[in-house]
Structures are given as structure tokens and as C-alpha cells.
Image (cartoon, rainbow, N blue to C red; front, side, top):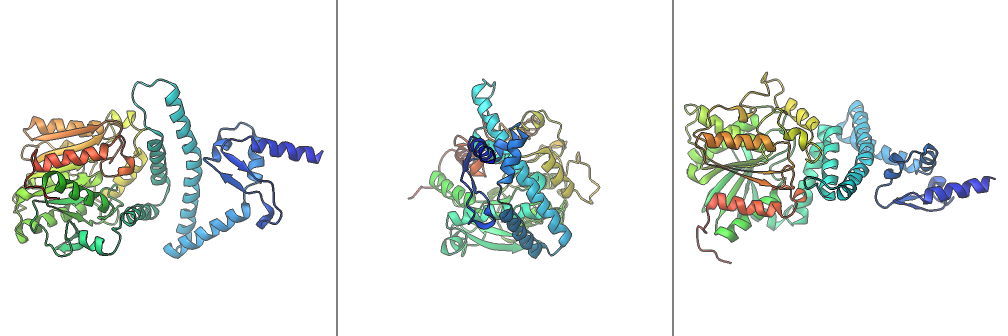
Length: 452
């Protein structure tokens, strides 16, 4: 009787999708059965109505190694944080994140299949976009901020290592640390190790990175910056310097720390380095786009406070232009974008912590500024799947209504920050964005003879 039960048990487990079963080997550590996940093992658990089958699967899990794995995580986290309570909270968050992913990823897969079968009114995200979106959302909603910051840093380091820019001669050729009075960052450009900021450059871009005001870093997009500079040299013969700022993150450095550092850098380039404002561009992506925008409005609204005019251009990638979540696309694009309302609220509360400012304050939400006339030429790109799509469109309309030369590129079937986060780009959206930026910055024709 017992033998028949074991055979039936083995048959049922082997019938599960995405699962490879191996008979027990008593010589293995703990005497458990190894289950090798080919795609998504938990898909069978969450979408099975047979509780007995679920119990049987759990009984085969490598409990001893799971406990050992959790113990290793505990030691690593505790060694980093040196606080028992925070360590336990972090471990719980990691496990909770993993459990949610085990549920959400199969659901995203099923949604993708459903979208293929049932005719949809609009083009749906592809499977890669769905998986990346789900993973990013889940991590940002569940993990402690310090872990999210590490993950951002690791992603940047990985890209740099994959492209030979993490260390060595190539790194030194393209990037070096720079600083001034109350600001710091990195100069990115050809021969950066010897060149001064703006030396022989046709354009200098002051750049604020994204990351919801709470994470990210000046070099997280180093590979993308180098790609831009090379592309613009090929298309227009242009020599470009990018000063990527390492501004203080919230909640340690809430508003207006990032904006003030941005303006201090601009002041240094104009008044100390002698670089003409006509050769300087304010730029940023996501939260960094907000920083670049409010810096420009600060110059516009308080000219007596600053002894510098507006820069020549304002270049924004998927900028955060309002802290409110009332636009139509905050509802219609919530399932498609890689950002979530919960993460947005979390970032915002950290950003305005202790300031007593309301989300509607124009210094936080530049969309609600009354005066646009006097802003520099503006270019914005945004994906059609973005939460901020309607807000960005409204910003452009308000700017144009007050005679600001403003352009917008809405890239179909792309999500937040597609133009700078290449893994999120679909159908060549990021590559087209580089060309659009080149045209906006340097015009239709090359600015000098192009040499190979």
C-alpha cells in the first residue's frame, strides 16, 4: 500500500509544469530530493487548487540548505548593518520580496499569454518588459532603502565592468572626480583625466541622475553617457562634456539639497570656469529631471539671488514634474510602467521630510508653476506606458502657451526611463532617443567636419 502511494506521489509531482524531478538519494546532505527549477517552480503552487499536491511539493524542498542559506544572509546583513533588529527586519523583507516575486512573475507570464490570445485595443508590454517591471516594482515596494541603494549601485558596476569602464586606463580616459564649492561629481568625456571642464568642448551638460531622490549615483549611467558622447561625435562632430553630480540623497539630504548643489555647480562653471551659459545644458532623468527643472525655475523666479542667466537648453528624460497622482495615466498605465504608486509615495515622503512643503508646492511640482516664459529651450522624452505621461504632456502645453520653445517625444510601447535604462527600451526606443537628443543639442547639420 505504501509503495503505491509513493508511486502516485512521484507521478503527480512529475506531472507538474516547469519542474524536473529526481528520485531521493539518501547519500545527499539531509536526504532530500533535489528540485531543479527550469522556469518558475512556484507557478505550479500558486495556481494549483490541490492542497495535498502543494504539501507534497513542500515536503521535498531542501529545508536544511534553505536554513543554511538564511543563516548566511543573516550573517552578511548583520555584518553590514550591525543591528539585530534591523537585520531581522531586512531578512524578513528579502524573504517577503522573494515570495511576492514567486507569485507575481507567473501572473505576469499568464497576463502576457492572455494578451496574445485575446485581441487588445493597444499594444501590450512584451514579456521582458513585464518581468523587469514586476521585479523592479516588487523590490522597491518591499526591500529596505539601504538594500535598494546597493542594488542600484551593483547594476551600475555591472554595466561598467561589462564595458571595461569599471577601472583601468579606459575608465581614467573617460571619467574623473571633480568638485567645487558645495558640489561634487564626475566629469565624463574624452580625455577626462587631463581635460578641464569645458576645455575644447562644444557643450557642457550638468546632469542629475534619477533614483526617486533616495538612491542612485552619479556614475550609475556612465556607460550610457559614454555612448551618447561617442554617438554625438559621429553624427555631428561634437565634443561634449557631462558633469554628473553626486548630490545628497534623501532622507539624509531632503529638499532643496539636490537643487542647491545643481545651482552651485552651474555658478562655478559660469563664474569661475568662464564657460558661457550658451554652452551649458541642464539635464536629468526621472527625479533628476525634476531637479534640473526646478533649478531652472529657481533662476527664473529669483534672478537677484543668482548672478547667472538661464542655460541654453533643458533636456529631460521621463522627468517627475508633479508629486500628485491624479492624472489619467496614473491609472491607465499603472499595470505597464516599472514604477508603482507605493514607491512614488515612499520617495516623496523622504524627499520633503521635515520641509513642511505640500506636494502641490511648485518647488516640488514644477508643473504648477505659473510663469514659464523665460525658460530655456526644452526637450522631453517619455514612454507611452509611463505613469507621468499626461503630466509631462501638460507641462509641454503650458510651456508652449507662454512662448517657450518646447519639444516632446512620446515613444510608443516604452516605459519610464527607457532612454537611459537600455534594458527597458523596446523597438530601438533608446537608440532613437540618442538621435533626437543630438538634433536638439546640435541642430540638423554637423557643427564641424567629422573625422573617423
